[in-house]
Image 1 (cartoon, rainbow, N blue to C red):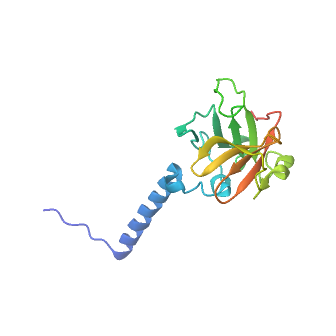
Image 2 (image 1 turned 180 degrees about the vertical axis):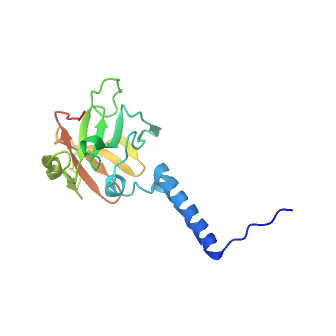
Amino acid sequence: MVTPIRSFPGGVIFAAAVVVAVVAILAWQGNLFDVRAQSVATAFDQPPAYPGYTWTRDGRAVASEEMETIAGPSHCGWQSATMLFIVWPPGSAATTYFTGRLYIRDPEGVYGIPFRDKLARNVTLPADAEATGYRLGAIEIYVSPSDRDEAIYVVSPRDAERWPRVDPVRLCA
């Protein structure tokens, strides 16, 4: 004979809370319902560790060699900064050797004060800005011919940010 397990009222509430937390974590990680991609800040205030988010272009997932956004390396203390690596020009074939560009979102200045100071939030896109086709849910990447060598634009339905280019690329060991 099997004896049923008795539960106490708080156990049901606890179990429901666990289920809600697990669903929320899975929704965030899988970006279900565009949970994190409604604003640039929501997606990148806590940048993802490698391999980062999966971006798409023309409806297909792109390889990290083509486009990636990841947290800076923690062993250098840069984990609060988001590093955006993109093949250049955008949409060209990715190679095993990085021939792209690096842009950084560094609101805390851990990568360098100049990059913190060059980050611009809540910007208006320049009139000549062009979509690159790269998307993360509702977030899109734009370039502007008038400043394409200086910055890239990360745009969501709620906000837009101008991330400065790192040139020359500086990484840590």
